[in-house]
Amino acid sequence: MKTKTAKKKTFTFPLYLQILLGMLAGIGIGIIAVYTNGEKFVQDWIRPWGQIFIRLLQLIAIPLVFISLVKGVTGLNDIKKFSRLGGKTILIYIGTTFVAVVLGLFLGLIVQPGKLVNREQVAHMQDSYKTIVEEKKQAAEMTHNQGPLAFLYDIIPNNIVSATADNSKMLQVIFFAVFFGIAALTIAPDKVAPVIKLFDGLNDIILRMVDYIIKFAPWGVAALMAGLVTDFGGDTSIFSALAVYALTVVGGMFILVLIFYPSLIHFFTRIHVRNFIRAMYPVQLFAFSTSSSAATLPLTLETVERELKVSEEVSSFVLPVGTTINMDGTSCYQSIAILFIAQVLGIDLSISQLLIIVAMTILSSIGTPAIPGGSYVILTMVLTSVGIPAEGLALILGIDRPLDMLRTAVNVTGDATVASIVDK
Image (cartoon, rainbow, N blue to C red; front, side, top):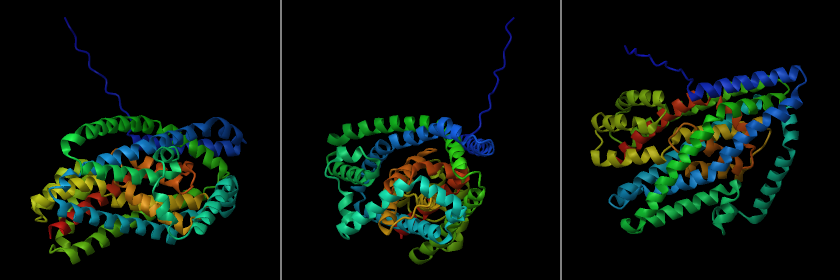
């Protein structure tokens, strides 16, 4: 007689909980090391694993951004049929993303959550990164001597191969990727189809590589946090600064959802603001729970067409494009995160570097993959481009999941807002 054996279900923690536990474990290891004089052990045997994690993120950054951007731009092939509609959509999306980035920079500079860290510890960190600070000063002086258009000049590479060999030249890679994608759009579809198919396959491979790297994130974050805690000598002011950072991000998200988007709806559409907020609430809640604009897209389409009375022709084009290139919540968050990390490490950013952050955040929003951890790679890329040590990423990864849920809700609200504006 055959007996059925019940399969045991194995419970696994979600990735965000694993990263949070890794962060807490790293903090614990760092504190124990401080009180047992084990700082050298942490620096020699634990921290390097965190640096390996950062290197893996930097390794994948250029191919991920290049392939994602080319795929994103060539994916707008409907822009030929809806040339006027496509132009309006993209310009408005870029405009809202610009506002989100500037809002994030404004909040980060006004609140300055990273400044809440103990000043003596910041001085210690500045000493640790003295070489980087000096390099940044020299770069700022060179930019000043080159003239006001040096920023635009540096965007265009004279050799794409050398540009891809240096993560600090990511803006040049982005320029080439967008240029490449636009050129591909002007070629007959049957001729460019093999190239698009190639990039589709490469994109799948790169995303799988990102997935493998992110699985290592809990261990990498634990190692980095242990190293950072020993750098700070066990000082707890970093955690109060982290709480203020999170509240600053939340404040930026609520400004976008409750002030910025309703203002656009009021001035540029015939939709009543109260009706817009009421209609979007279920969509925001679904986006918050899934942390995926793509997964929320069917509900967003249904709500925008049925509740907001946006035509199907507009919604079927604007909303799918928005899930690819419109990342207002993510852009606002990245601006605050970059300033927070720079402030904690005691690094002052120049005006030219702030402009680079604005430009790269807007352009890279097109190439941000809609997968867990995709924004980590983009954030690492922007940090490296303005000379901020990417190790500082460990400070924010532990509390990133709830903020990711919130910024996804902001992203879908922005998509619906732009669809309503374009429809009018």
